[in-house]
Length: 175
Image (spheres, one colour):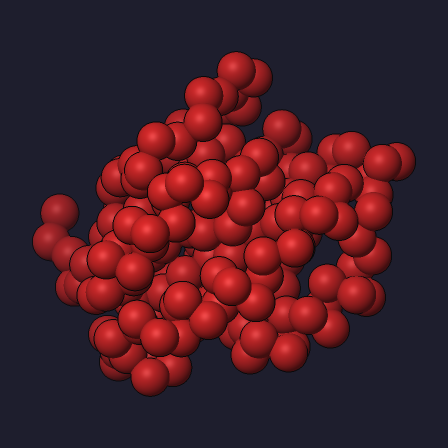
């Protein structure tokens, strides 16, 4: 299969927000109950065909722990798009929002890096601490190209996140 373009996608956000389980669900369509914390960064590949365009996503799942944050700038370089993830059941998962986005803004190599703002763990809606309205307002304030809430456990909206980002990338890079 020949691909028209390969896109580097970074997934970032605080620890415990579900970045690794989101990536695993997208790649395998399975929910991984026991997911170890990412050490530094994890790298995966996924091929997609959207609107007749064949693209490859290089998915860089960046560790959310503060002790690894010094590595983050080097992984942003060359990124085509990004996913910022927070946990809808943990308002504190947005505590470093400005810090994450200031690093992305400083080190991105394309002026309009498309970012999808993602709220994870919707299957735990009864513990919700971050309202959809508040999260959408934050997404707009960071110029996010999209906003989606999802559940890696149920699979709700997981593919939609990556397909939306891939479509934005196809448009941006005129594939």
